[in-house]
View 1 (cartoon, rainbow, N blue to C red):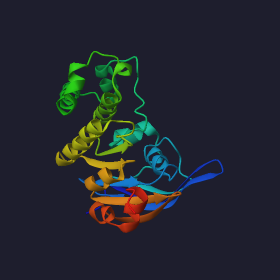
View 2: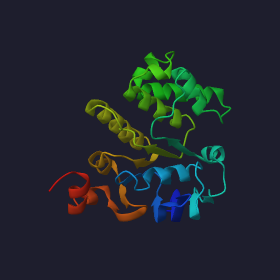
View 3: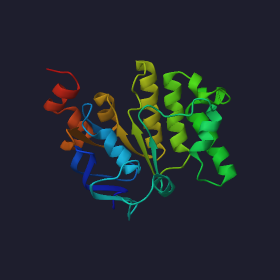
View 4: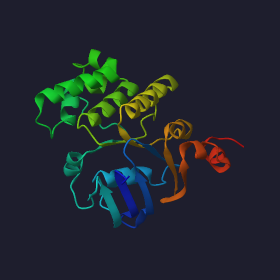
Length: 238
């Protein structure tokens, strides 16, 4: 089966800072693939490049059989790749419902948009109860739910999640991870960047450890979860 996403020898730089140094990986339809690593490893830079927010220096990005390298960000969303960014990046003065509507800004199917908003409310019932509330007044966990819901409103073929559990309580983090698991069950393909390596590897079909802009180790989530070096470096075990 042809991968949904193919990243080949990708290099990305910020001026003189070479942030991503020739990484190669694939994501197949229906998979959860995770990138783990310390701060500064290049994980967020990778997602921002895939979504068109950064321009690669060299390398090839192929999505659903077609190149993405030269497309602007809104065209990449139109192709079916959505990004829920680190820090959530909501519109704080707009309501929950208005933020969700903005996630569907490229769509014209009014009935379908309404149906997908209800789907988000089914996934995150608290958002339905607070749909008229400004998003800036939500808790951190509720804002993360809204950021994920907004990304889903474009009906993506691939959903990229950047640090969805950052700053959340253990209970709220578990809720977010349970939702990712539910989305996978529903057939959503997910590329996950996550600081909680244990949670990410438990969820992932495939996983890649990034170190200083390179992929240092790859394997199934289960394999890396039991790898001695990963357990020592990322799970805090001796």
